[in-house]
Length: 78
Image (cartoon, rainbow, N blue to C red; front, top):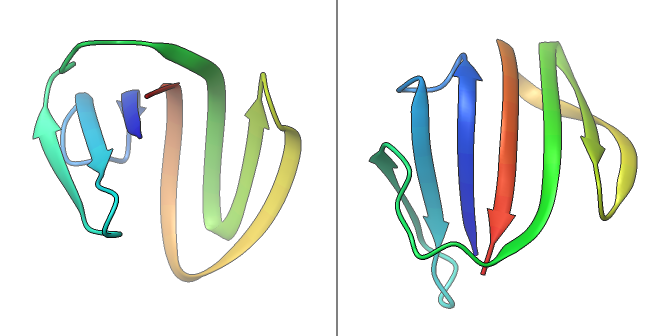
């Protein structure tokens, strides 16, 4: 899966995070294709609480161990 994101709080303003089948992942600056759109999401991370609004999975609220401040618009691709 690829997660292409735009927003504040990540390493770069535009980035692509790729998850491989073996569970490893890596980041690249910019938007890296090809893109086969699966869903679009908004992620808001305030402190240790993460709010996720996803076009495929709906609304989720999660707790994380680390504290961040992020506002991200993203796409999920195969």
